[in-house]
Amino acid sequence: MQAVGRADYDGPPDYRTVGRHALLPNTTHDQAERYNFLAHLNRHLAAEVLPGVTAAYQSAIEPAFRQQHGRAPADRHEVRRALEGHSLYRLWSALRRNTMEMRQQSGLSVVLGQLRELIDRSAELADRQRLQLDPKLKPPRYLTAVDHHCMPGSYYTERLKQDVSAAANYDSGLFVTTGGLLGRLADGGGRGMVAFLKKLRPDFAPRRILDLGCGLGHNVLPIAAAYPDAEVTAVDVAAPMLRYGAARAASLGVNNVTFVQADAANLSAFEDGCFDWVGSIMFLHETSYPALKRIMAESRRLVAPGGLVTHVEQPRYDAAMPLLEQALRDWDAFNNNEPFWTKLHEIDLDQLMVAAGFDRNRLIHEGVHAIADEEGFGDAAADEVEDYGRKPAWRITGAEVPA
Amino acid sequence: MSEDREQPPLDVVRLAGAKARGKRPYFLEDADAERVLSIAMAIAGELAVLRQRLDTIEELLETRGSLTREEIEAFVPSPAHAEERGRWHQEYLARILRILQQEAEAEERGDEPTSAEAGARMLGE
Image 1 (cartoon, rainbow over the protein chains, first blue to last red):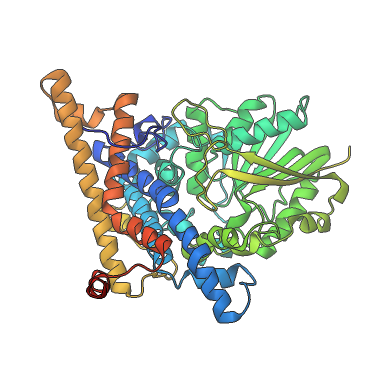
Image 2: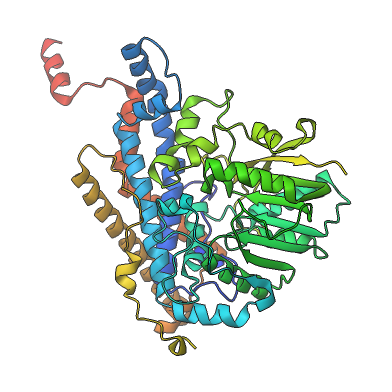
């Protein structure tokens, strides 16, 4: 095969280099290549096509808006509507939406063909003490209106008894969207949080840690591994994610995490002040405004004296962020079934935290980026390609609690 | 184990292509054109898969002189070879999506004459 290209290769790694564990669905040659194609397509859309859209905004779309209205766009929604009038933006959007749909089809076809084996493996591997399901818990309304990020069946649908398909699909195909920037085990967010906390509190020895909206536990495992003496509780509403997560953790040799099916907005099963660290990583945007307020209140109630709370999300749309960037970051809210995304990034989380009882003088604001673990996987901090809202470079909003 | 639980059969092909809940947005002025674009991109993906499979077969034949289907399924490119395949993907996508690059360049250049306009001007020169 003749290679044509640029001096430095900055594309995604080959899919076959993702980290293996006992639950990861097997892929045939062609299934792996479908993921490779889609990872490259996503990268192409971000690195090659999107710069043309932003250039067109500066040179044509924004000037045309000024001419028509006699003023600049006032907010990100006006920018979005102006963008929608331009063919390049529409083509980029059509391709981006379609790529997400292709990724879902590819992932589900990988997973559903071997689902019975995956269910059996998860049942064999998961430590039953480490998996606490609540069959009576209904998925909250914020999850059931639309299927988040175009994932058919969302996180919670059970296609078979003891289902793990939602998690297996998520895990298997995540590579396509992140192009390897989250590391071999897609745990770069958790690794980033460990680095942050080791710097903030070098001597921190938490006895109990709570991870809210853990999904299949990508990010909580490096945290649990970094604090092996801590007892870690990871909660999520979706049983398929938790079953898979518990088995995956066992397969990776992490044995201090208990996966609990519970709603982060109502954790009445846990006593006040029983966790030294309460955190969430890229979870809040999947919820709703009323749920968010309750999650903040539960975080405050559950954190122990001397402990801390951290919530990781993409940066807020504040006055310093250009309106074009806000509009592009908002794309997933309108076009990729992330209904709460736009409101969440508008909200002043500081105010919500203070309203929930945190001390304004002890709030934490810090940037954090994914730390990949292996040569050949991208360096999120050094990567110059901006894939608005999807680049693994986040903001921590948190608070320390007086001892 | 699964049989004991009397799990129903799954129609994998239909379920894999299922629609996500929520009304789908369309972006192009003609939604039918977007549906056709979606089909074209799916075919582009399948062609890329086939091209990489051919490269795998060539690699196996060149290095081993023979091959089995199992070897194709188990194939993992070396780091250098994976990079070469990655570069092929980049060039392939640039070729498939050429019109987007050219539209962006046209936008950057602003008003350009058509050939007919240029020709008309030449009559006056």
